[in-house]
Structures are given as structure tokens and as C-alpha cells.
Length: 602
Image (cartoon, rainbow, N blue to C red; front, top):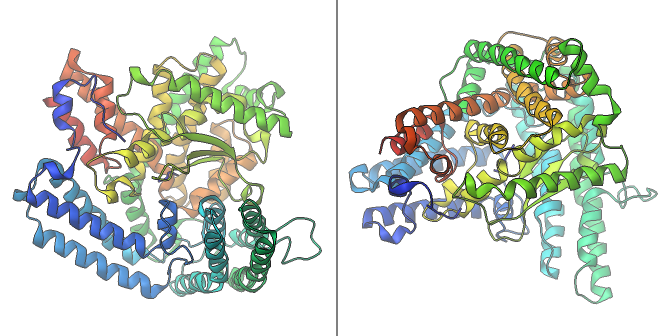
């Protein structure tokens, strides 16, 4: 999940240079300048209206406020999107714009049209899932992104804590509207949702006799302690923080818990999108959005089955290489169960895991010049997921850097269970989440000159972002890494998981597989244990279609690369290809195809 830049044209030849967008808006004509001014106006307006988005971008705008997530605001935003789209079409005729400006106008239009098209499904998307939702996302964002560099920043943090009842009251409004529309998460989600929500208010000062502080309180008091202020002022701030936790945070989460407890008996035991009102239409819209391609569930299912078969064959080649005697499932069991493949489940073992990830990062960074012209300035760190959200977090994920350079990109590893983090999987995981995967793509996009902010910082187009990260796992192999056969096995296992995702996501949401059927397919075709498979399946159940974006995106990028090689022959340059993929930020795959074809035909 990504979050989610400067231009060097050293090896792509004049053709590659010609296709790079303008470095400065001012170099274009008046129509372009007017369009970019419109983009800036809309982006700055939207950031100002969404304080948490501003905080993510490192901007202290509305620093003492939380977003308005009410239904009324959703309707107002829809009207604003329609007005922006009408203005784009009316005021910025295509024939007046440069080639680069036409591309960004088209992307702005597509993003707006997608929001309008998706609006009727807003209550079909689960507000809370077992891996994400405001009950965990808001505390995590406060902890990781609300900087306390002054007394005013601390007071802003406290003000935000006091707004938790209003914010989570609006979350409950969204839950009630979804409930009324016949959309509740599966029944078995509720115990974990309640437990994870309750974790936010465990500890002092909400539980005075506790031996630890509640997560938000621990974060804020720790940040206050580092301020250069008289002790009396620090003590006063900490008293205000205590009151905000007791009077703001605690009642907000308790109210949410009460709602969840009341809704649980009404929830449906079935798991797929097919069970929701107009469920087949909804899932088709999910696939369209997550892949950016007009693919059917049947096509995705068959593609997944074929890829599983192919990758199984490559793993059997690894078995021969290491002289393993036995079946494929025997090899899965061996690599899952043998202690040699795991770091110790100790603080030292966890530290060693993180250290090894940074060593992989440093090694591949040294070879980037041979494969990339575009490289990120922003640094990247590897961190363990914080204990309070380990249970609800995926195995690994990436958070992008702040544009001001004060917050690095972060590759998070969930180390709650070291038996779920095999050594052989760490190398590919590092490349996927960090360099040259998500960190390269996200940081480069944010640092591009001549690209509007909505495109530099915009999300969406998961098949592009996740497809790129999965593509870079194979790219790292082509760069000379994965010398150890078990690490190469780990790469194939990671690709296998993404192929399995095509099968089980479409199985659950279109073919009416139950949860156990999906878990069984996972454990019968990968080395993942039952608990890990269950966690994966729970993610797909709560997030229809998202799991298909990885493999579909990777396959598309590989297809585009091979087609460009055939067209260009000896003129093909891998650095120029990567520039073309990365130089405009996230793109829907059809537009990415147009960009690559234009580059390769010059």
C-alpha cells in the first residue's frame, strides 16, 4: 500500500529527452500557465480543507483540526469535483495546450471522472477492516506525522485529541449509512475490530492503574518532554494532554466500540462482495479501479491459475539447484519449518532483521546508475511496526516521505511474529517496499519538476504503484541480486503470493468461495502457514479487488518492456524505459502504455 523526482537524462538519447515534460511551467505558453494555476488552486484548496492530508504533506495547515468526514462533506465534495471538471472542460481547450499539459489535463479529468463514477459505491467500501481504518489510521498518523517542534504544536496536538468525539461521530454516521444500505463487514470481523479499537485506550491516563501509557498519550508526552521549555510549562501541557485523553479520546473510542457491539449480531456470515446489494456490479467496479483495465473476474482468475502453475515450475528448478528430494509441498514445509530460515524471535533477532534490510538497500543503491537516470533524493528508513498496531497491520508496507524532507520514506516490517518473517523473504521484501520499489516510485514522483502537485502527490492507480514494486523484484534479479538460491526462492514465493491473490480474490468476490476455501487454496499452493494465510484472506475480504493490482500491473509493465525491446532493437535502453515509466508519477495502465509506445517509436 503506498504512499502514496528530479530529472536526469543521461542515457536515454535524444528521443528520451524529447519526451520528458517541461522542467518549468513558465517555459510553456499562456494556456499552459493558466492550466497549471488552476491545478495549483484546486490542489491547495483541497489540502487546506483536509488538515490530515496537509499534515501528511508536511504542511502545518489546520494543525489543530481534523478532517470533516461527514456525509454532508462527501456530498459537497462531489459537487465541487463536478464543478472542477466542468471548469477544466470549459476554460482549457486542448488545442491551446502543450503535449505535457494535455497529459496532465487528461489525468486530472480521469481522476475527477473516477471519483464521480465511484461515488454511488461509497457505502459499499467497508469503513473499518482488519488491516486498516480510521480506528488505527488516525492514531498512527498522529504519532508518525504530527511534529511537536514548539509549544504551539503541542497545543495543536491536544486540540486534535479533543476533536476525536466529533471525528469518530462522523465515522459512526458513515457506519450507520452503510448498515442501512445493507453493507456491514462479515460477522467474524467484529471481535478483532473491537479489540483493536480498545487497544487505543488501554493504559494511562485512561486506565490510571495501568503500567504503560496509552499509545497517543505516550507519543505526545514523549514529544513534549523533548521541547526546550521550562518544566512548569511542560507539566501544564502534560496535564492538558491527560485531560484530552480522558475527555476526548476515551469517549470517542468507547462510543465506537458500543456501536460495533450493537451491529455485530446484524452482520452477515458470508464474506464476498457478491453478497452485497448489486454485489457483482460493485466488484466489477472494484476490478476496474484497482487494475485500471477492463478485465473480468473470469480473466483474472484464469490468469492467476496460469501464473501459479508457471511459478511452481520455477520453484521446482530451485529445488533441483539445492538438491532437495521430495515434492513441492515437502519443500514448502521444509522452508517454512526449519529453524535455519528464521531470525530469533528476540529483540536481537528483530534488530538483525532490520539491519539486514538496510544492508540489502545499500547494496542495490550502489548499482542504480546502471538501470536508472531518475533517482530519489529523499532518504529511506526501515522500522518495525509499533506494538500497538501489530495485530492489525500487514506484514510490510511503505509510507512515503514528506515533501519538505523532514520525514523520510519508511519501510515498515511487522515483526510481531518472527516465524512469519523468513530470512529468504527479506531480500525481495526490501526491494519491493524500498529501493527500487515503492520508495523509488513515490519519492521520485514527489520530486519531479514541471509536474502538477495533484499528480505528484495523488494516490490511486494501484496497478501502477504495486505493479512497479512487484516488477522491481524481478528487476533486482536482472541486476545481479538474489545470488543465494533460497533468496531467489523467496523472490518466487513473493511472486507466487501475488499470483494466488488473483485466484482467491476473484474466487471470494465473484465465484462465492468461502473463507476456508480461500485459505486452503493459499496454504496448498504456497509455503505460508495457516495463520498467515488467514490474515491474507481477511485483507482481501475487506478490500475487494485490491489484491489483483500487483500481478496485473507487473505483467503489464513487463509486456510494455518486451514490446519496446522488439520495436527498438539495439536502441532500447533500460534507463530510458524506466524514466518513461516513472517521469510522470502514477498513471492508469492504458496511459502508461501510450507513454511507452511513444518513447519507443521515436
